[in-house]
Amino acid sequence: MPMSGGAKYGGLAGVVAGNTGICTVGTGQGLTYRGYAIEDLAEHACFEEAAYLLLNDGLPSRQELERFKSDLKDRRHLPQSLKLTLEQIPPSAHPMDVLRTGCSALGCLEPEGDFSRQKEAAVRLLACLPPMLLYWHHFSRSGKRIETVSGPDSTAGYFLRLLTGHAPDDPRLRAMEASLILYAEHEFNASTFTARTIASTLSDIYSAVTGAIGALRGPLHGGANEATLELIRRFDRLEDVEPGILDALKRKEKIMGFGHRVYTTSDPRSVIIKKHARRLSREAGDTLLYAVSERIEEVMWREKKLFPNLDFYSACVYHFMGIPSSLFTPIFVLSRTAGWAAHVFEQRADNKLIRPRAEYTGPQPRKWLPLEVRG
Ligand code: ACO
Image (tube, rainbow, N blue to C red; front, side):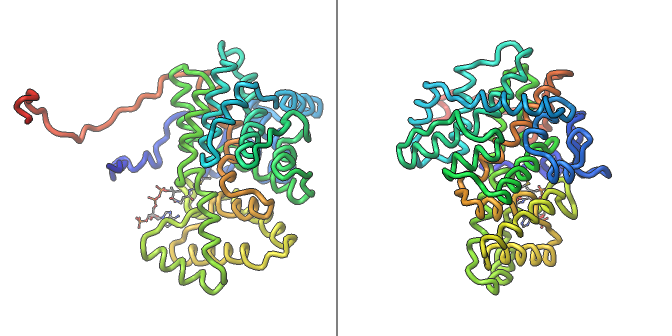
């Protein structure tokens, strides 16, 4: 039976569930990572700078950044038994399930152990999830066992290179960097809160990230970017968009990539990713996908005062990079692992078991009936 949060508790909307020094969302400060505005990070930083900032509470110096990138690059190898595990997963599996399984398997092969090694484990995960995903992707499609150790220093360049077989041009690389930065962290969203809850039991980081991947998978959270492309692709002609969306709204359909639990008038991340979508659309000579997206945005604002969240224009950006839609949410994982890890560290630094209470709404006490009487 589907569960409802219940009107009174409404999915804990507006409930402050703890302190964090990692990120501000929907406050007067705008969206910041450790005090730095998302607009500055997305414009000037590379993903590794943002990830380092989240894990270390400060931007890296040039030398620290080089060392961090080289640490990531050195940790891209996949243990043989992990490769064998990935090879057993059928081509029909969803890549999110592959990452969830791969993360869990890595936790068996290289357990975190003592929490003093938590940063090492986080770096290993950040380094290892992209090759894990792409190893399975290529093997399941063509039986090809790709070499995962070489490739560009940057996670963005490495991912696109390994996926497509060639180096991305500058606009695509910059769009990928921005996308990874925008997805890296977002306070107490469902997957991060899952990771913190798991960490609060003093469990290991692999369990926390495995659980977070499961929470991210659903279409109300990370899964929306994949569902968004399906929506946009419904329309072959611009003039069909308005009646199509009006009809969907009449049927009470959720329009994927719109709305947000915390933001009320716009998602600052959407403004940034939309610029990359427009640029890539122009360069690709696209005359439909981006225009359809903008028309959906207009209709949704006019009819429902709902605005696109990060997932909406991300779908366009990834499409113009030639990324299959089933990999959209996994890219979110590759990036958000930085935020999840930062939250695991923060939770552990001042831990208290997360264990809320529930208001009982079940039956009144009943008399025990022996099996013979129940028939
Ligand atoms: N399409 C149509 N109507 C919507 C949408 C939408 N995308 N989002 C909200 N609404 C409507 C609801 O139907 C509801 O209307 P009602 O009061 O008439 O019943 C009202 O707005 C409030 O919506 P809720 O779902 O109750 O709002 P909540 O805060 O719980 O949900 C959420 C936020 C889950 C993001 C919601 O807006 C949604 O489902 N969006 C689509 C999925 C999506 O894009 N998820 C990505 C989130 S961002 C991210 O993970 C990067």
